[in-house]
Length: 183
Image (tube, rainbow, N blue to C red; front, side, top):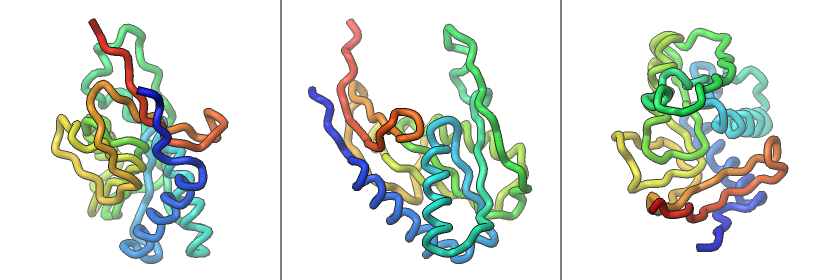
């Protein structure tokens, strides 16, 4: 299967704007809300979300951060190369806040479970919501569902969804492609 572009740069921007309007509708002035991106790839989306929210609302004090989940994953000991953790940047107490966890692709749900475990080290939030750019439904290993979804994609396990960010790959796009079959 040739790669299929799911979202180009313009469509990605429109999708982020739509997600921001949904957040504004549910969180108002964000006084009791924090937006936390899961390292590494969810942070790019969280940063875009916060920037667009500030543009749309005129607010400049939206709590946001980045959360590393490396050692909370259930598979970190199974890798041949020791994992290198990313930086956690949560410089506020999440106790009694509404927290919006942000990730780029929701697939099996294991990353989100690890994110929830890591989040608890910073206190007990009032509520946790999940925002994802791409929801690969039909692939869950755990009962995880996003509150805010950019786009749902029906894909099989031999397919992969890749989100490219201008900050790292030099282009904004989301692509679906087949991975080689294992013998």
